[in-house]
Structures are given as C-alpha cells and as structure tokens.
Length: 592
Image 1 (cartoon, one colour):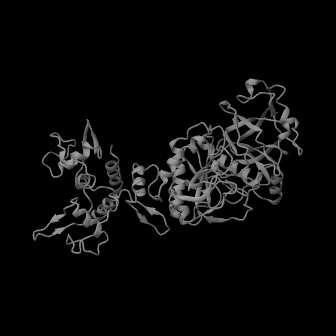
Image 2 (cartoon, helix red, strand yellow):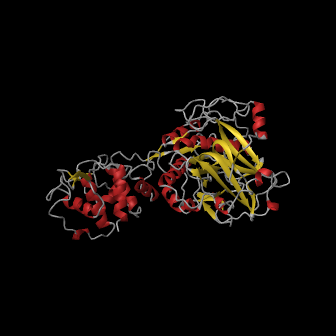
Image 3 (cartoon, rainbow, N blue to C red):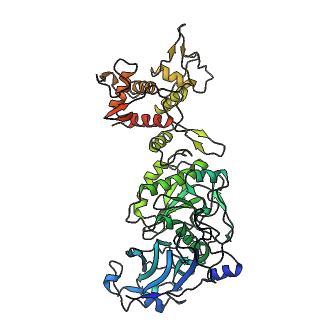
C-alpha cells in the first residue's frame, strides 16, 4: 500500500490561539535545549458534517487486503480504511468528532503507526469520550516517535459520527532531544514564560519523592483559559492512555506535551486532564497545573473522569495495559504519587471514598476509570492489581519511605496495623525516620500495639525508678515488664531502671522477640535447642543472649550481614534501626 503525505491543517482552536498570541509550544526538560521542539497540529477529516466518509477515509480500500487490516476484521465490515499517511515526527495522535454526536458502540476504531522498528500492531483506541468538551474525543494514543499512521474503523457507515477527525500532535522540525528545533512558521507560536511549580511545601515534598514538576515538560504552553478549581481530595482514579508502549524514556516529556496540546487546545479543556502521569519506566510527572502545590487536603479539579472529577485525583500511565502486564516500576509510581497526596490529606486508601460505581456500589479511595465510565481504562492488567495497590498504600504513608526503600512493605504493614504512627510534620505529612535507632520506650510501645493493645491497667507504683507514671509510654513499659519481655537493669539497692531513651541493641531486640513469641504468641520457644556452632561469627555459645539470637536466625527473622565464605555477622551490640525493627516484627508475625 502506498504512503500518502497528509496535508497540514490548523484547528480553529489553534488559529484562535495564534491570533491571540498564545503559545502552542511544549518545552524540554531543564537539561535540554531551552527552545525545545514545538507542536504543529495536523488534522485529517474522516467524515463530513453529516457523517459521510471523506476521500481521505476511503483511500485505503483500493489497496487494502486482509493481511494489512486489524486482526479479525475484514474489508467488507469496515467503514473507514485510510492510506498509510506519511507525517512528520509525532508521539501522540487521537480521534475527535462533533460534540453533539457520539462514537457509536457499533463502530470500533483501530490505529497503527510507523515507528523506527517498523509498523506497530493494530490497536483499538478508546473512543468513550470522558469529558465534556468543544468536541468529542478519544483517549490519546501514544507511541514511540512515529512518521506515519493508518486508521481503520469497523461497523456501519451510517453510525459514524459527524466531523470525525484524526488529530496528530506533530513536532515542528524534530522530536524530543534529537535535532535542534527548526525555525518557527505560521503554524507554530513562540515559547512563553515557563510555568513555575513545586514552590509550596506540598510541591517540594512531591519533588522530594521523585515527581517531576510541570516545568520538566512544559516550557511555555498556552496560558490556561479555565477557572482553576480545587476540591477536597477523596479518591484517586487510575487510568492508562492507549498506544504501542514502544516509546523511549527521552520521548516522555514530548509525549506529555502532546497530550497537553490535545486536551487543552483540541478538546478545549484549557489544560491537560490528568493531575499526574506515570511513564513505563516508573517516571512520575505533574500534569494539570497546580497539582503539586495545592493545599494538603485538596486537589485541583481535573478532566479525566467525566462526572467524577470533583474530589478525585487522576493518575494515568502512558501506554496500554489491557493485555500487557505493568512493570513493578509502574505500580510503584502509582503508589508513590497516591501515597504522597493521601498522606498530606490524611486519607486511608482502604476506606470508602463516597463515590459509587456504575452499579451503585460503594468504591474505595482508589478505583479505576472503568468503575465510573464505560471504558476499558485502565486496562485489565492494571485494574486487577488495584486491590493490592490499595493495601500497599494503606494508611497515610511516610514522606521519607518511598518504593525504593528496602523495607517499604514491612514498614507499610507496621503502619497499617497501627503499630507505628511516625512523626507528623508541620505541613501534615509524616516521617518514619527509618535509619534512626529505636529507643527502648518506643520499643515497648511497638510491642504493646503489635499485641493488639490489650486491656491492661498499669500499676500505680512505678516498676522502674526512671519511668514515672507521667512518662509518655508508662503503660506500655509496665506491660512489657509484667509480661516478662523486659526485666530492665537491677540496681544495688534492689530497684530497677528501664533506661527508656537508650537505643535498643540488636541482641536485646532478639531477647524481646524471643520472649514476646513465648509470652504473647504462645510459641513453644522453651523447646528450642541452640546450636553448638553459632550461625554468626561474632556471637558464640555462652555469650549473653546467644540462645535468643540463634533462635532469631533459626526462625529466619534475622539473617545478619554476609561477610563472604558463607559466614555472617549479627553485630549484637549495634543499635536496631527503625526499618530493621519493622522487618523483624513483620517476619515474627508472618513466619509460617
């Protein structure tokens, strides 16, 4: 089939923007050329105002054969088959149609693009319009940098929408970071001032978690012409876009800029619809302006889930995940972004959100677009993992514990059980301080809560001379002592000290867990016979707490540090870090 060069047309919205002196430019990351590539809108009309296919929509019929059509489709059942349309470089394309019309259920649109590796597989494009707009519109279809495109629509011709148009957010001159941008022409507007983001405490925290501020992809897009609204944050809606999933990491800022152009200018939303985006490499990006900086308990109202935008945060991954399983990096990206805003707002992901699905059932605080709209989004491979994602997010998380933390699952588990609350910061966020040593009084509190905060009345007379009844953790320390988990230090006069602010040593932690397993969990630790050969080079039979440390190793609660040659150290006198404490407790309770 021959390739045909498509004409360059400018949308009415783009022409209006030019006349008004607005910007259609989408700039590069700070490290790239400040002038950046520019978006040049390209449109191909596929049906006229009465819904009749145009010549461009029918040019592919003459040379099409079954091998060149979407799988399972035929020429006879197709209403539209375009030529292979040659273009400039682009990464974002979409379909639009008359606002008063609908893309009928009887019609399905397929798209394929020519990337550097060849023609992509045909993929259906989500044509369920998700937001009121100046025109109906599909989900954006993203790809690696492409230079040609072909469209096929199956179903009856009489059900095609009016003014069906292929929209391509083409780069004027060059793709992202490849070639120096070419001089502008009448279809491209010069860059305006760069959007500032991440100035607030909330925004700085988001950046600290690895979320790219808007300025990393937006080098001066058109000034938003919508009234920015905020609402109390109640839920997060998970999306995918659509596309080939073949894009490179360097293409991501340009892809987001292309989606911005499609949402803001073509559909007339005034800004990108998603509050945040995740790329397939795990990169995280601010989308709609202000989403990083909005106050802790709120979110900027987006344009991502028609009828459910107020009170929700839209987070979309770039790509299609109907059949393709998302990487762990993608799921970690979702988790980081949602935990970040939920922590600021004090939301527990496991609670009900107040939103209802299409059947009227109550939804949790994290749900998929398909729950509230007739769409495949976010793809079954992501949708099936939302329950697990909710559990991972759990209660409000910690600003200093991201997905890359070695013990994030254990720390999250500990928080979800109510064992630790961390420290609440001035901006409402929380810190766990994973590398700080565990103080003995905090250890008592952790173990008391781990036991389920049992009914217990502390004695009126203190058990330890250095823990008066007014102490913060008096009840928990007293419980620990009366359970026989801690004996403290006996003084010459027969009294005892607990030394609440001293850090817990690793050998003492082994003793605490050993006694907890016996006294609280009812395990028969008394039957444990410590080995004659130590599992660790730095603690030997006869040493204090050797039995308890050996039991810890036998149970798989601690592996120590491998030092080579199959040998390991326990480092018994080292302080226990808070993240390691979380791991010890998790393994103790969840050991099969």
